[in-house]
Length: 304
Image (tube, rainbow, N blue to C red; front, side, top):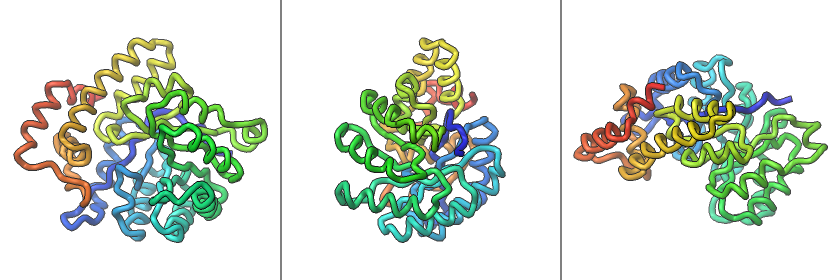
């Protein structure tokens, strides 16, 4: 039976060498830094981790380095989604052999349709049949998302999903999309929230954990947010969400990928630059960016 899913999970950024490869030494350092912040899990090689911009070999290297550094202290979900299903299958098998807590995949690109999407996901999940599988779903289309996940319930090792959307009505429906048979087979059914800006609301609507990019910079605020909510102090949880969102607003204003790398550099973790087509922050913007972070209390939140 899969382990209980809970808490704050950074969508791990993948440090880059000057040619866009994997800086494995800095990857270890970033992973160790987040472990020291008492994170609850890691999600690697996803959108924030620029997995689709890495080769299969590089993605395998990321998984190996992270799993070695984690050494069983927290669960790790590996995103294996790829343009070619065969590449995703290879990555899923590799992740299974590393004894990961789960594998995940984005929707196949270019709008393949429900039937083809189901076959794509079924094939990936079957490559690691003893590992929970989490499709990565995007919000805003209640009928389409619900229809897809209803179909995916046929997959024996479906563990839930990562849901990136602001529609709490839709998220609640996904949380409740279970039945007696599934409860017997997988007590760890979990819908991860993928929108950092909506973390407190996702918790209110039943999501047990959140996966997000800004958790690379300030995971502690999300841990405290959830702890406050679960202790019944909803107003404090809301206030922490507001404080975190002020930082997130700055990150988006300066370009999220460049801002994530520059934010880590501000914390003493030089992870290089994003890989094209994700844009780096212009050198002339960096001082202004740090001043904007200071104005919204970023370093206080990062210290939590």
